[in-house]
Image 1 (cartoon, helix red, strand yellow):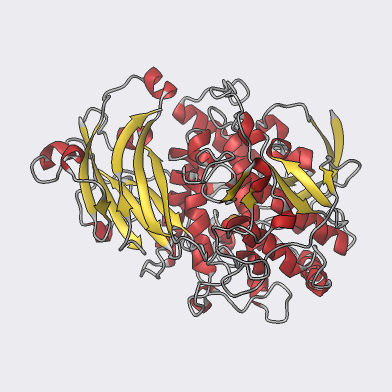
Image 2: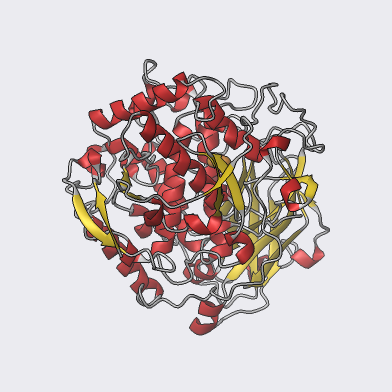
Length: 594
Ligand code: C2O
């Protein structure tokens, strides 16, 4: 046990308090969170004009929500939850940290050193002959990341000052603002190869697989420490853009102040004030703000609960040394993570810069608050208990990256060391989690839908794959098992798999998936039960190949129960193209039990 001093929730003005935290917990459960540290903050939704139901935003409330959910889903007690994924597989080849001296030499990407971005700029970091191995911070102030829309004026000023100093550092200082932005570009635009793992012809890509959450957690960890050290405030913590709660669904207004270091000209000018669209299709809909809030909460529920039933669903597919990262991104990575990027990015720019394209995303300060909330989702997800555990595969745990720290040292870090935020010295401010109560309500039972459509809609066995997604695709997909018992359902999730999705990686690509929806697909919205999830890909500027291939999955167990379609032999799957879908092809649509 170690005692940590926290100065939580600067924004809420609560007093500093001390609590104990166990670092020996194998996986964070609710007990590793300071759930009983009361915040005085009432639900901030009250300040929003929309009438959205919401309880007081105390930490107890979150616990109540979690308890309620457990009762609803029969998950059992959080503390006693059985770890169903605890058998580690034999690690063969974890991806090793890139050799930064070889940055920009990837023969496949077509980049040359010195011109790693589509704009000809260089996204390689300064070289360093010395690599230190990561050590946990000791004797450090504990950081509590606050909700960005609840910051005090003082905190905003502090954040602004830290970014200002980061921008003022010499260009070749690895802590410099642009250098930090380049980290993201280098790790996702083909600047690094897997040469240190013995595969110099295969690139490193930290999106679309199980590396998404840990890479970004480490990235923010060092970013936050650099900011703190620049203002000499070891308690400085990166605010999180709380887009999963109604009052947090707009860009915090201090980001729009042209005099602020947080300002960025390359943002969608039509979105500076409005409610974010967590399911953004690349163009604005005519939904009212109230409808947008409702849809957003429904998307959150789908992606964090229905579609994130186990580690693979949440984190994304496997990605080991020698492999291309094509196994598919996790639920939250696809949506809302990707649509939020695109919603902020500037449509006046050729590639949706800054947030709308991977290579430039880190140049907008909002990126770090966006990802702070994405990272918070990882913590919240684990608090749901049950199968919500970190991956135990040793290849995942032993994957490494390198980052420069606040002292300009190049540090090698491992995924296994970032699983507990408390251990890394930070946590998140407790705020209400309204989407836990936002399960869409079925409009009508959808049983027998597939039966009625036999003869009118093709069965998946009769479809000639690959199919093109230039228009809505409807198909009846057989279920190998129907009317499963509660026990069978607890052991295995029924999963919809869309396999071999080939798409143009230079476009914003998105499609939505609906289950047993007989209605016109143009009316379909995420707040209806039939909405199963979204596939979304951020453009990925690259000089080499532009075609990518990956998979999509969505959880069906709960969905089919809600639609009262559990006894049906087939399911009607509707795939609705939303953006950049003209050249998408799909190799297979099936239902599996895993
Ligand atoms: Cu690395 Cu939000 O992207």
